[in-house]
Length: 265
Image (cartoon, rainbow, N blue to C red; front, side, top):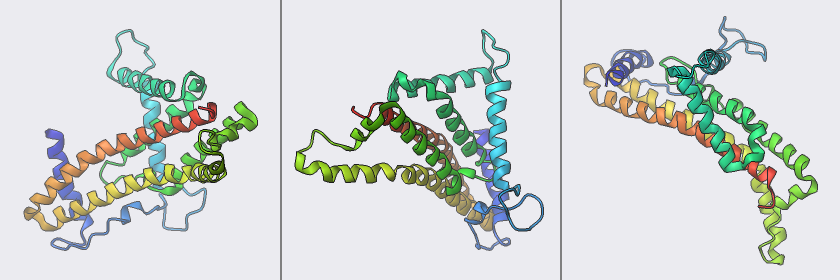
């Protein structure tokens, strides 16, 4: 309850900043996704430190703090940080084993790392005035392409030409199999698009709506009680979305990995 009250106060304060002035309703919800250099206002090159690289770095630092610093004691009776790390580790390991099978456990470290990165980037993006790296398709498409290329390579390495049986629906009538094969190939190639757009779209939409309601709350001043309650509700929803999207990305990765390891199933 105290956290929700603090969120409401933050919504009003930052809503005032979002509006052009007190009583103004000029709200620009997409401005928060603009990539800006950390130092100066010059052009952005591939080596320029930006707000995106800053918050991705903070996400990595948070992961290191939890998984390395939080578990360094290896206590029999775990601390809170060690309990959280062990819970996350066990949850994702069981997901990989249940969805993709025990053969997929060698690839668990990458899947777990991707899950933690998305989860922490999403949660840190809920801090007022922060930046959301996973709202940018440039970030999510790299994550998705890494999964797609890796899974495809694993499929051919493990199964050789037998990996192509993934696209051949042997249970269908023979006359339909070539058509279904084309559809399966297209569906397979579209995977990185849906994999990346789903994450970026969900995060961007939620943050845009949150800023709109925060802008209303700030612009209306004392009359902005209703928008404040809206911000509280949407913020709670965004906390769920942050975790759910990391979970969805991870479980889809496990499904794709299962297809690569067992294309005949």
